[in-house]
Amino acid sequence: MAPESGWLPGEADDTDFQVLFVCTGNICRSPMAEAFATRELGDHPDAGLGFASAGSHALEGNPATQPGVVAAADRGGDLASHRARELSRRRVRDADLILVMAAEHLPYVLAFDRSAADRAFVLGAFARVLPDLAEAARSPEQLVAIAAKRVRARPGDDVEDPIGLSAEAYADCAEQIDELVTPVVAALAKLT
Image (tube, one colour):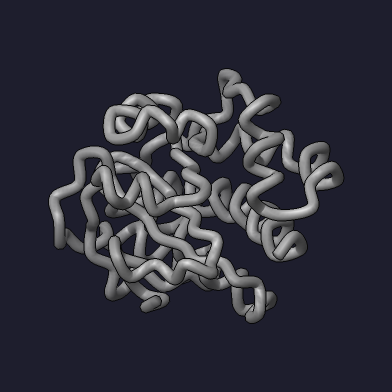
């Protein structure tokens, strides 16, 4: 697993619990989530977690946006070498947990694999109910199974796309994603 690029189809370690973050272009929000999750993994080196990101409309190989690179770096995330990856059937099937940035991304995930409905959630919704779920789970897989029954997205759970907006909007987006991803990684690491 290459930390700067996430796991790739066919390269995911079967012993690791794989988390896939999804946004639209895979040049801002989901790469930030992957970068922050990877940063947090430094506090849990034996956790057996893997992180990757992809975009529902990504152009494979595009770099992260420059304002996104700066906003992520300000919070300890590294997007300098990130290149966009397109959402695919294999990426969806290889993931144990799929966290999308907005509800609009769920149909794209499910178009590749309908069974992903039980492991795909809006990041904000998943993080919002995580404290209640984590206490009942004994493993990351059990956490996802419980979440499938209890997590429902609400207005305000989406992470809004800052593409084309100010540097301040990117910084706000990075802060929001960081605050959502950090407890998710901590909870998953505790359960491994």
